[in-house]
Length: 261
Image (cartoon, rainbow, N blue to C red; front, side, top):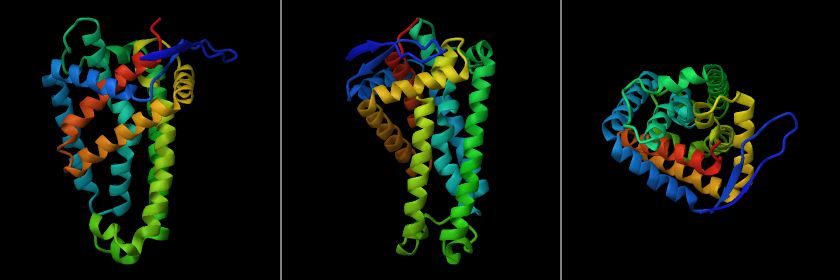
């Protein structure tokens, strides 16, 4: 249950009223996300299939490059908030008593606030580009030549004892960057689709929501990471279900943390 509402005070900005929630509230978001997935399963799973196929094709293309494969696998968590726009749009329609809409229904909220959403997409693209360069640097500096020279990505060889230093550094830096994107995006993109707010206001709201709910946000981040990892370890087949579920649940996280106008 929501426990407390408050209005953040930031000079020169009008932020919405936020809520503090219980630590296990993310489990409710998952339940509500599952409900939306079931109600609009043809469209939701259809999007899931498309994203899983695109991910598989990209990984097949990058297989001969260790750093590109690692960037794509880890970069999903950086781009997922934007890619999940389709599921935010479906959940928004269901919330108003409508059906899930058509395959291009997500374009309607995009047209409502294109500048703010576009700027956030550019920010995510910049972060992913920087991460790709960091990945290339780490591979070049810390990976042994035998792994790089195999000509394709080998997960088993990567996690051998010879490469623990690389894996440790890569996971720490990747987790730090993913945490930053999580804090910036956890409610900002749904908010920009739901209201005509600028990018800075949406990001500031997201940061306040995270700072005001440290335990629930830690649980939610762990849920997202755990389910995403499970989806990836099934050769992306699991992402057909996992990505729609997390996308719909993220809409309900926004609705719970940010009070409606």
